[in-house]
Length: 401
Image (tube, rainbow, N blue to C red):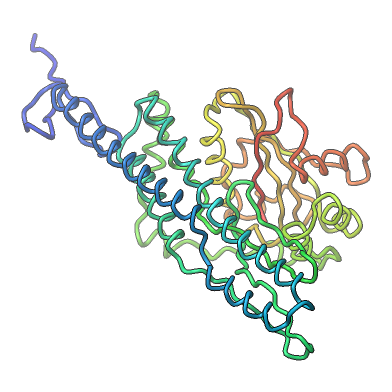
């Protein structure tokens, strides 16, 4: 009886041997060249770590020398011309400029620190491939470009005043990074516009690929093959245009856009929550509570964040008529996801349009009674990012708006 031939060609030496597949590059390697391939990846990771160290040095330098010094000089000249009448306002403006610059650096540093933790985790577990490395490279490039961007801060003067009043105008942005928001505050008669650092959410694929690299069962391999299926041009062209189901619904009295503005710019407890309950239209909107079905599969907190971000990305067309606060409770290797959703209509929204389905079946969904006091307490807790769930303390939250 002939021996079964289970050998394939090694990508490196082109010889028929027993080979092992690399998930990152999809090539087959014999044992010897697989080890060499892993060493190459290790060296590339070390280069990335060195780049991150250099970026850390740049951040430290900029913390010692804040940006926008020219604006400080303009404010000083304005203060001199106006003498005592505007000394207090000049002081406030200086503080706002410095605070804006420092906040910008702190925001970039927070992103950098978060990515550094991911690198440490990947390095510690020694489970990574080209996909993970490319993700880390791209993230470093993005925050480097953000740090190099010229400041958009300017001075606005009111020519009608006897003494020209000045205020610090900050660029208004709409994206959010984790739970870090710099919201409008008033200092004397000077007001700061919204400053919300703009960045792309974590890629869900990063957490999935890292998890699947650690352990890929036959069932996962089968699922991954389906996921990687490439659609042809004709598939895209033949796909019917999706109609937004919300377009045919009656016009509500609750202004969702205004609520989102208040939630982003005002105090959540004193302004946003009272606005929500005073204006909520229960005839045309509904409240829902969701909880992730498989908390035992959740590992690192940053991977759980990626899962939520990926879920949000697939619901872009639902964003105009919906709002959600998804919270992560617990710690590394012991965490879960739960959240509050608000959307138009009284049905589970994800079944109304194929564009809205995402992976909502991974969560349990329960419609809440608007008139129940327990519902109000629960909604307030999730809007405020407080409390605990199933004995796990709040860790961080993500807003869908």
